[in-house]
Length: 394
View 1 (spheres, rainbow, N blue to C red):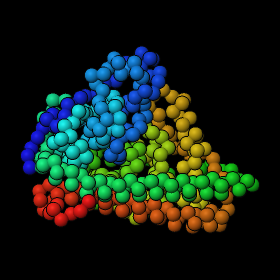
View 2: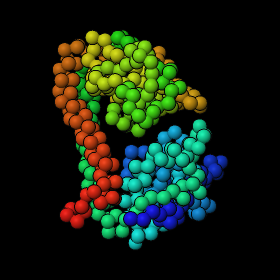
View 3: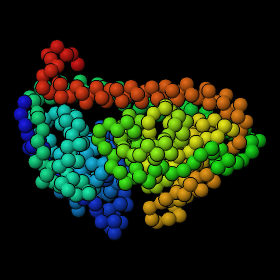
View 4: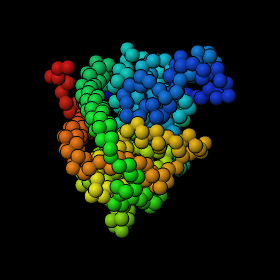
């Protein structure tokens, strides 16, 4: 086992953003233009939200990275996300990349797994008294990691990849299952042509934004017993076990606690993302979200599925199209959304069938969390020899 600097593993490249004033840089989709949102919750980057042209490549080729490069988000409160790009591309300036990796001595997946466990460390050295954490190129290339012989790296990477393969499969299954539920739900709505149309406000027992105090208080790394769902958790699809802990008074916790069947809706940044609370846990949301509690005239799952339809998405997207500044959805706008008032017995009949599939989705999420915990626990044990690799067959 030896310690090596990231700069010794490959070439360190900090990305850049081609001038948006030059339309020729963005007139075609010849190359991925990778940003922080593209590398969250993925091991491999196979697509990007934005793309750039061949002309952009010609004018910025020194900042391009090759396929199989490791990219790390190195600026901001959510810095430390790691991924591997699957094709030549450019990243923006928030990302440092290890490219041209010496594969004779370093297994790319092994390096990825080590870096993916170092998020807290990145924040620690990147904060340095600043409110905006940042790892510049010099700091990044001098970070050291422990690396065994290449044969050991290969075996460790293969073991951990088996766990990630299962996580990926579960995610694919969940996407298919939820699409099945949503397709059935759309058919259910279409069949009830004679239903009365009502506003969402008619379905509400309680609705309010999350606690202001949570936004000002830091999300802490230690267990306070109270988890907080933030906008970043919603946009990145994090489930309950991945939400951070927060401090708050007993009074605020009583006022803002989320209970089973509550629906959380983002109201700033990316508006209208929704999450349904499935268990009785000690959780709250901050004031970037809206908390909705359904009254007894409606099935909570029925209301939640309404917020997953294309019609709802189109309704929410009007906010983004009507303003050039950061959109901020008022509670009144959300509750003005119109839905069908279908007979409660019919709602319950449909939801009882859908709930078994939703439960399966939740079980897969829990399994994924356990697999990810196992993966992160195995890595140091595999590295320090606690687990005998000689007797493990891959």
